[in-house]
Image 1 (cartoon, rainbow, N blue to C red):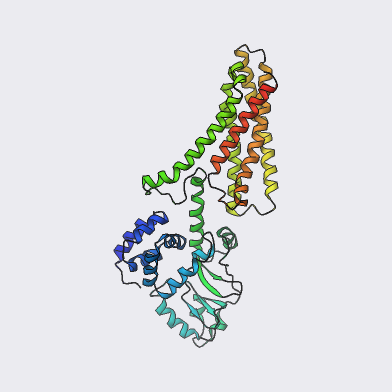
Image 2: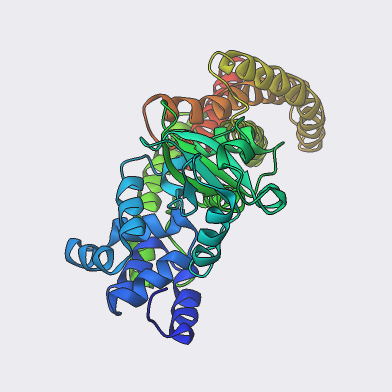
Length: 404
């Protein structure tokens, strides 16, 4: 165990746990490397790897030098894998034995090892570190002292691959409920361990960031993030959103003559924008959920789009009838001779807008993923612009075409 003050570890761990990775790195760079190692070992492995990745090279080197050789080697190995993968969550395997070792020898070794690490299972490997079996503590304690571990171990072993995405790993583990999972390469060589709680906690951290990324809030931003850094992250998206608003304004200005002639159309522009926007956001939420949980497999994109188009058609028709009646009543109240035609315009526009918005909401995250971008990144901003332009363009264009 590292020679550090436990009170200092707890205090710094509390501060670091609520920080973004770059902020955690800033805090760790100011303390003794041994203390930084103790704090990193207390964090979720994914957060620890992110903080290590943000450290300056000299500070990272000093922290790795202060860690045990096994821990330092594991952290370096984890950096070789993608952030959203099992490989980033690996901890070094401690209780590793050979099949020719006797039960009494393994128990003695475990007594020493449990003083410096939390051990749930023992692992049996051959001379090349290929995983042969798992040792359950109950079986080990009930076995004869002179039995070989090869006769006591469970040889039907389930393991995870380091390249597996967290979503895929969660689906593989959800019905097993093991506290710890070994991680092996394709040839079965033991690379590390992943705790079940760590796996699900890491995925929860990723999911919690999506609500912000949809509107241009960086995943790393926290309540403790300085104002200037939050401004730096958020403001470019607001400028981009302003430019898209100009596009929407240009569409409305294009039909200024129609609005001047039939002023009451302006009262229904927010109605068209709001309803089509909500339809698109519903489709976007379902698409993102499917991608996050791994439910949307390759080849199923067309089914999602058709479903959202059908829902847009039905919802648009139902909402369009209500809105059309509202337009008819308003136009009739204003003694407009084209009250019925205006109601029809609202009905048709609502149907078309909701269909297109539903399809767009489903396509935005799919297209972002296809081009290698985060599907949640500013999706809401892109979708809102598209739905506003289409809904207002269809509404005003149809009113102009029908000469209302």
